[in-house]
Amino acid sequence: MNRNERAAELEKRRIFGIISHPDAGKTTLTEKLLLHGGAIHQAGTVKARKNAKFATSDWMEIEKQRGISVTSSVMQFDYAGKVISIMDTPGHNDFGEDTYRILTSVDSAVMVIDAAKGIETQTKKLFAVCRMRGIPIFTFMNKLDREAKDPLELLSELEDVLGMPATVVTWPIGSGLNFQGIYSLAENRVYLFREKKTVDLGDEGVFGPELEDLITQNNLRALREGIELLEGAGYPMDEEAVSSGELTPVFFGSALADFGVTQFLDRFLELSPCPGPRKTADGSEIDPLSDEFSGFVFKIQANMNPAHRDRLAFIRICSGEFEKGMTVELARTGKPIKLAQSTQLMASERTNVDSAMAGDVIGIYDTGNFQIGDTLYTGKERFEFELLPTFPPELFALVLPKDTMKAKQFQKGVQQLAQEGAIQVYHNEYNETVIGAVGQLQIEVFQYRLENEYNAPVRLSPMDMSVARWVKCEGSKDDIDRIKSVIDGRCALVFDRFERPLILFANQFTLTYFKERHGDVELLEATEV
Ligand code: G4P
Image (tube, rainbow, N blue to C red):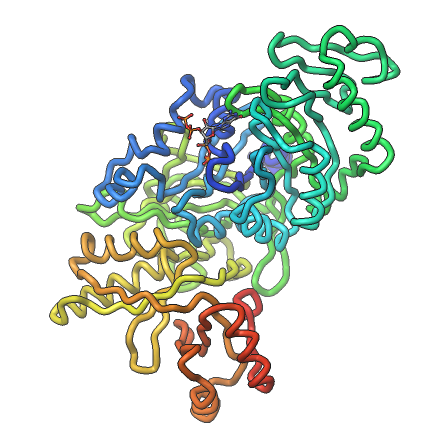
C-alpha cells in the first residue's frame, strides 16, 4: 500500500476498550456491538465465552470453576465502513493489572454504567487510567429498562465523583416499567422503546405537540424539564474537548434490549479518533503512516496449550505494515525476530493473518522472546516506545516453594510470569520472593500456574499491606541502611526488579502516620517511578 492508501485505511480504524464495574453490562453491550457488526450471528456468544465455554487449555480450569474470564482478548469487527477493535478488559473478580494495561493500548474508552447504581468503585479506578492518558471517554448509561436513577443525578455524579463534565447525546424518557424511549438531541428525534419506531420532532423539539399522545404526561413533563435544564446549564457538544478526554458524551439505553446501542455506535464512530502517533521513550513520536513497521507488546496471554507452554503476544501495530514472516528488531535486545505465526482474534474465532497495518492488533505465537512493553520495529533507527506505566498493587504475599528441591523451577516460573506482566515480583531483604497484584485472582492464577506449568507448588503468606510507595534515593548502602532504620512493624521494605526500594504500608492511615514522622523520606507513587 502506498501512503495515501494507508492513510485511508488508518482513518477507518478504531481501537477502544470498555470499562465498567462488574455486572454493569459490558459483556452484553460488547455482544450487541458485535452483532451489529455481523461479527457474531447469535446473541449469547460472548456471554458463553465469558463463561469459559470455549476455553481450551487446562489452566483455564480456573475460569471454568469460577465462571469468569481470566484471559482477555481483542475482537475485531467491521461496521459502517470502519474496522473496529474492542479490547476486552477483564472486569469481574478477575480484575488485574492486565485490565489497566490494556487501557494503555486503546485510543478511546467506553464507560458502561448501571443507571440504577451510578458510578461504582471499579469504574473509578479504570476511569483514572483513561484520564491519565487523556483519551476520549464515552459514557453509556445502561439498563434503562429497569428502574434507574434520575438522569440529571447521573450526570452530576459524573462531574462530582469523576470530575468529568458530560455532554448529552441521547436522553432517556422514563425508566423501568415506564421506560418509553430516548431523545436524540442532535437529531431532534425520539426513538420509542416498545413501539420500535422513530418520531422526528419539529422546530420546538420536545416542547412541540408530536410527543403528546405518544408518551405519558409524567414522562413528557420530566423530559421537558430535563431538556430545559440541559439547554440552560448543560455542556454543549465540544468535539475538541471530547477528543482530549475532557468532556464525555453521554448516551442512555439498554444493552440487553439492544436499545440506544446503534445511536451510540454511530455517534461514537464519528467522534472517536483513529490511531494517532505514539510517543517514544525519548519523547519523539512515531507517525502511524511511516513506511517502517513498529508496534509494542501490551499483553501476553500464556499457555494457550500447556503442553507447549506457548504464549500469544498481543501487539498493537503503531506504524507501517505487518507481513507474515517478516523480520523485525526487538528493541530491548537488539535481536532480529521473525514474526512467523500470527493470528487475529475475531469475536468467536482466531483467524490467521498474513498482513495487517497500523491500527490493527495481532497476536504472535511466542516461545518466550517477548516481554510486556517490548517494542518491535523495522528500519535503521533503534527506538523504544514510551514505557507502559506501572500500576500500584494493593495485595501482597510472601511466596515460598513448598519443596525446596524445586527452587529452580520456582525461580524460572516466577521470572517468566513477571515477564508476562502476570504479577509484580519483589524481594525482601532476606531475598525471599514477594508478589504484588491489583486483584485476588491474579494471585490465585499465579499460584495455580506455578504448580501446574512449572511443577513448583508454592506456599503463600498474604501480607497485611495494601499500599506501596517507592523511596526516592540513589540506592547506596547508606541509603538502604537509612531506610531500614525507619521500618517498623507497621510497614515492610521490599525491592523491585531494578533493586529500587519500596515500602509497603498496611493502609492509607499508616502511610499518613509514617509521612508525619519521617518527612525526610521521600516517597513516590508507582506512576512517578
Ligand atoms: P458485565 O460484563 O459488565 O459484568 O455485565 P453483563 O453484560 O454480564 O451483565 C450483567 C447482568 O446484567 C446480566 O444479567 C445481563 O443480562 C444484565 N444486563 C445487561 N444489560 C442490561 C440491560 O440493559 N437491562 C437489563 N435489565 N439487564 C441488563 P444476569 O442475570 O447476570 O445474566 P443473564 O442470566 O441475564 O445472562
